[in-house]
Length: 380
Image (cartoon, rainbow, N blue to C red; front, top):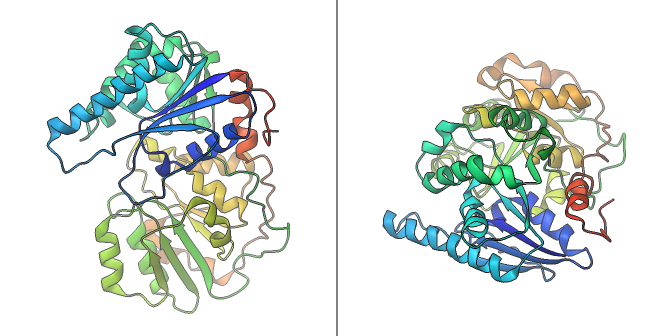
């Protein structure tokens, strides 16, 4: 079969997209073409010899807004024309950012491919009024008015976001909605059960991987708390999408037991890095509904590598995950970390958690089946 994967945002910013394409590349009798854009964060370009990747120019926030808008519109027009020429059996597009190209393909170029839609994030109406969201706002309107009703599959990343999306669109048949979670691949071999005991040694090693800013995360609170406990705690912060003023602040403070790496790591490097730590941190303040019900892919990466996960009390989605699966997740009030001294004084329970169900191969199997892709190597 012929599958088109349309991802207007750079693939390099979304490890689950790369994992999905890796698995697609291992299948037989499937021709895959990817339509995306370049990245401006110096991330190594995703490559896969088994899929053809077409990249438009990376969005440049420094150019004239009108020029930027025209470049973005041209990407959608060119992608729609390419889809029509490719004649795919199915299209899977990601986020409302990609929807305009799909709408043009179906409504102007009379395309007939089966349609699959996936959203990495959950968007409320006010989210589309943020700077830079003009075309995604149009894409969302096209989804509500047309594309959602064409789709055979519309997915969200977790149960809570899926519930919210279904409530927002009661006219879309319930059977169209699916959950497509962000799990690491089976190749991320977990440590043997019973080999790690969190907080049984000193210092306790904490790591934060991901985006960070003072406004949206508890990065300052956790760094100051760790710095106040030398000998008991160490923290490593890494990521390529951390606000510049966070790095500047850490450089200025020079906390002896807080290290950082502004370049981040390639995704396939993370298993070796994470297994050197005891605690994986999630630090979002829950400033939007999207982040209140966020269960980041880093959570499952931490768990797969044998770490306990600490998350803020504001993140209801994380709490629901803990209750559903009895996972080694600990809920903390990051605004008052001085109240959790017991974390330093008492060993945690043994971290022995079966992560076998939390693999990309299992997560993607339903969409592979609905697409009709056979001979699914490593997708069992």
